[in-house]
Image (tube, rainbow, N blue to C red; front, top):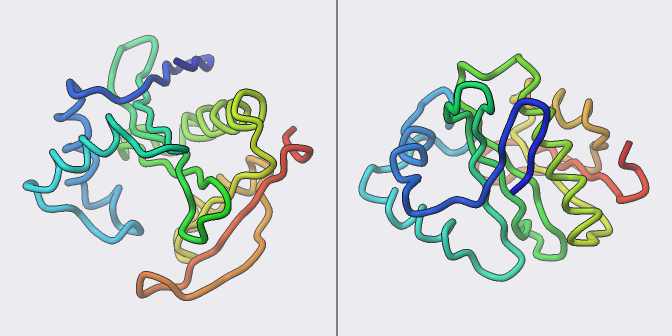
Length: 164
């Protein structure tokens, strides 16, 4: 379990079905992530998060004060296969309040100090300006742009030595 000033970040469990469903069926959250998922796929998605393959980590984010579900964050192998990618999905009511940056920073710190990763990458649609600003504010640098998943993607990276 990780903690930030306002959040508890813990491994996902089978009890988190309703929260995972809420994220994956939310059109605003999934706008730049390939769209919403079919409700029939939620159990499979959750099972993969609860029992992830090696080098994959999935966490649920909760607000400490209210115990409310905030979102999900993960570290898992990037499509290139040679480094871990940080990914996050927060419910819209938590956007613009600093929660994503707070949790992103904590998970990056965990990746570099506990997992001893040399670098972490992130990929977001170039059109997703909120996510790009968050990554840049967190110290990640744009390293390349490529077409993938039917859209232009911006690939960011941060080295262990770059962590603020």
